[in-house]
Length: 198
Image (tube, rainbow, N blue to C red):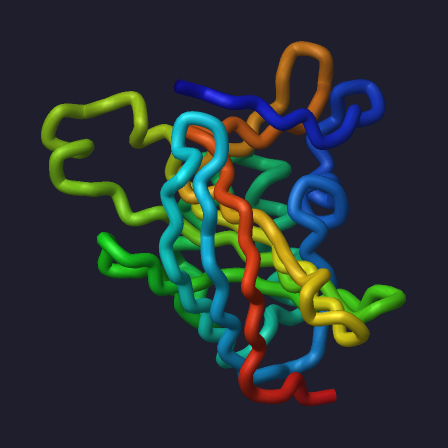
């Protein structure tokens, strides 16, 4: 099953990677940090009723140079260009998901909001041996990304979304879309440990 999420219309169909950073993922410029974010991921749609505990470990947030690197990568090669570039970038953290070996996080940001901040990340998804051996279409959904809204005023309002298997595409109308292999997972029960450094 595939699901499409249209993020924004790009002027004249131009593939500005800035759209990837500020619109599709919202990845921005941030300071260094070291923290652990625990969350419960709840399945949606056909995965309703399933839930798993995930852990996101951020050793440092991405820099302006990192932003330009992924920006240029998507502008030149779209999803595959981004995937290839993320594979070469130094790990800045890790996401641990039960049933997998987990993934190093290649890019992450923390952006202030009126009530706290939003943490966003994108990284390459580990392709399973069975997928590669059978050359399945699922290999095209080679990114894992997510967004966590941290509400410092009311922790119960903190939440987010996880896209376990996704790809970014520009459709024929010039819209930037996140296409999912299955459904997104809703993130709740957010607990943040460690403190973001200014």
